[in-house]
Image (cartoon, rainbow over all chains, first blue to last red; front, side, top):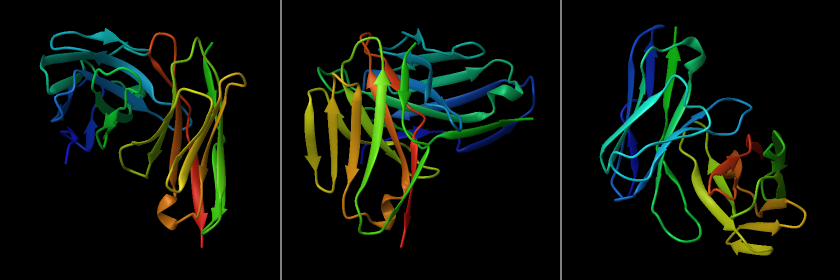
Length: 114
Length: 109
């Protein structure tokens, strides 16, 4: 069963702490994405990557960075967590194909920053 | 700006039919997606429309009118397990996905 695995389902951190969210996919997908999901809002893209060591800013990259050293792994880093980064973080991957680029999502990491 | 609108919440009865609407205004169009998300779980892909018309997949169908900027997801023979949020997303001219806030569907016995 193919899947996207996020390392932590629930995290509680303090303001100013560094936070790592890891995501691993086993489908050999080229593209990987980090979204945040907040009540009443659509998914918002933080960063994406279409190849190893490549990264592109999404709609809300401020306060975040990413790392993609291996094809299967895409990490989201919060250098200094703030309370407004309390959210659900979803990782997704997709193949590079013509037409429908279907995303496969991980189960999410719910981060609370105190 | 780019915008996707869908109702916040809908309620329907087990065994009935429900239609979830999605209207969009985007910079270009390269397809519309519907995803299902059960509470606390990952969104999962339901359907993709890029041409006008109806796509049927079992109990679920999705319709697209590009000229009207409109889509709907039709769920037939509702089951309790269909209680979930349904997310509409449009791929714009840059092949970026623009997401609606989702429609929470509540199924009552």
